[in-house]
Length: 199
Image 1 (cartoon, helix red, strand yellow):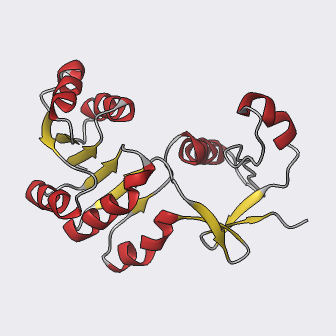
Image 2 (spheres, one colour):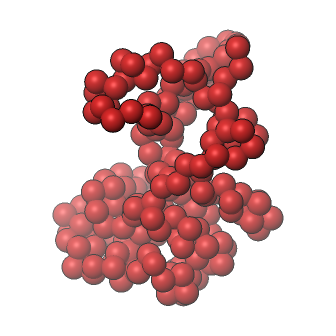
């Protein structure tokens, strides 16, 4: 991976710029944000000559596509609010780049289970020969990476179960709700849809 565009100059964009600027296989980073001063501040704080900034409006598909095409990016990282997932995914597809995001805004019922809005684009990315890595934040992305790292150390694996505490149906704060929610039935991703675990 040589060239990465990060859209969103907030806390996530700041951390991503710092990490990617130290990666040997990343040669160029463009941090895009609707507030150019914020992007410049992040670039200055990180202090890497790999980082350039660009004004990017995550609500404007055609403007993002132009910037993405001009930059010939290998990967577009969505570090904005989930509200902009669809627009950024659409622009990324049109610009023929790979995509990564950290979260989903819409979780909805589908085929008796739960799904996320980004999966609507799965067929389009596959048909274009591109990759879309979704939900790569701490849950489920970091959890998946930790499970993979543990699996690499083992000779054989029969089962990996991950409890998702992000789907809570109660009014209590998460810290207190976790005890109660830990006993809720597990949900498992099968065929790109999250379904309750079968007994």
